[in-house]
Length: 446
Image 1 (cartoon, rainbow, N blue to C red):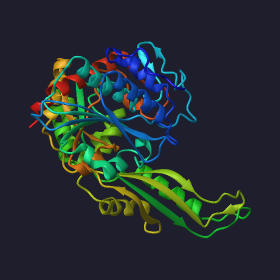
Image 2 (image 1 turned 90 degrees about the vertical axis):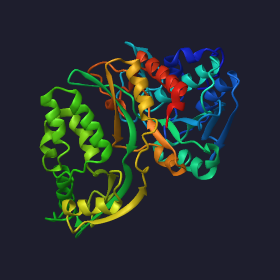
Image 3 (image 1 turned 90 degrees about the horizontal axis):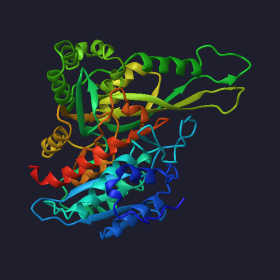
Image 4 (image 1 turned 120 degrees about the horizontal axis):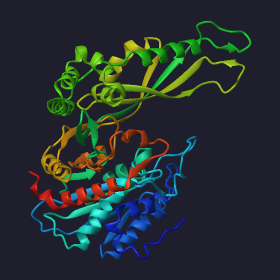
């Protein structure tokens, strides 16, 4: 499906419609095929009189860069997001995932949250700044990227490595995720991502005697695999309280009723944090991932024959390491859990960003707290990873800032890679305005 820019000169005033149009491009990765979506965005920028360029490792997978000139009193500000999305295979949706439909005040579709919604906010704010003649403190660079959902080898990782000069002098960037409202104990918190965990993919190999499936083998590789998986499921790794997690939990603890604050403060004490997490209910999953290294089994590879007892089974573990730690720390903590008879190998390690620079945090926090009086901004450690780890190689601090004012009871994280991904129309409008205010004020960063 090709959607031309057409009558879109004022589409920045309708960020939800812009999101709908982006969703209608099927950019499922793999294979990605982001080209048509990028061409649509480029058409909007050209219509606004902005110059653009593209850089592509493969022709059908371009990355788009546009620049708006500022006053030159501050370094450039980078806005970036990816337009590829994950698969919808095997999922049951209430509304077709690439229709970009609006129902019940929400825009539905793959990418509504991750992260075409964020791209729509940034693009709307960028076009608004152009339309209203805003002259920001420094240049503003907008970058629409490919391939984030498949390790960015055609996107940010390649772009930073081969064309890092495009981002010369950039100190701060706005990317995914952060700025979405989170309701707790009658308060609205807005976590702004300033740090993220590190990817460390592992291969665990279980070996043992094999044989014919007609003759059961007690204690073989399948049984050993089951034991290993059960231990991983039941024995979480030790708690480590990083500086960002501490600041986030302390801020929340200071703003909620005393009883809830006591529970949050217990999370800062590794010896009792496990008990405190169990009292958090549904929130324990994300909070626990911010306090521990994790290793999640995701792929099991073994015999393809129904009548062969395998002598070797490979298990891929999606390992995530807290900032400030190294793969050796994960391996050391994982070994007692999986056992000495399982081989462990590091398949991929992407070093994360360094300790965060909070120079622009207060400005972004103030933008959100002014947009939603009574809201409370706080820093967030992302349990996953984003393209921030690649831009960090250029000395760029990314803030996850794709703001959404969400209704109470709406679970933001259910939509990330899940079925029925959707975002409130009013939330997208809130976010586009907040990003615009950030552009307007970013020269306040120290």
